[in-house]
Length: 175
Image (cartoon, rainbow, N blue to C red):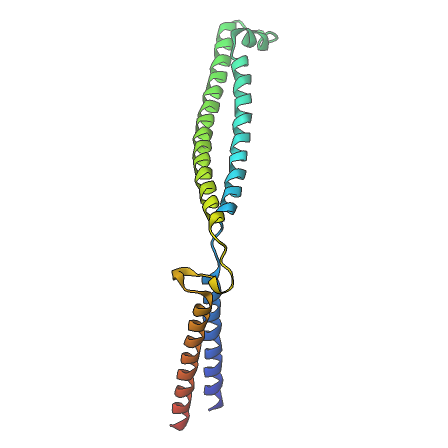
């Protein structure tokens, strides 16, 4: 008999804990637009830094691919076919330059997407900042219910479940 009562009480306690944790999770707000703006700004700075480094590398490659630069780089190398060496070096630099250009294009697309997302997040953050802050009685949660009504409803649910549990316990005990 005592074993059933303990099982019932522990089950009821677990149910109450589950309900309370569910309420606290649903009351948490998603990240604000201002947080999103900061995150997007950081990503944009990172992309801009990568873009600057790639532009610098592209400039170096453009300088290196000039015939006089290729000639200078191969000046100390002896060969019976220097034309082939110059052509191979030019091809190697062209391939690397094309790769850098492709990366730049990808980063430019990412930068444009981030700038767009940042503009939208800034507009949303402005709208959020223009709204009055909910306080005390005016605190609203999902669905337009005040926080007090939400807690009262949760308390009512707990009372009903507790009462139902007590009735089941008494009915079981009488048998």
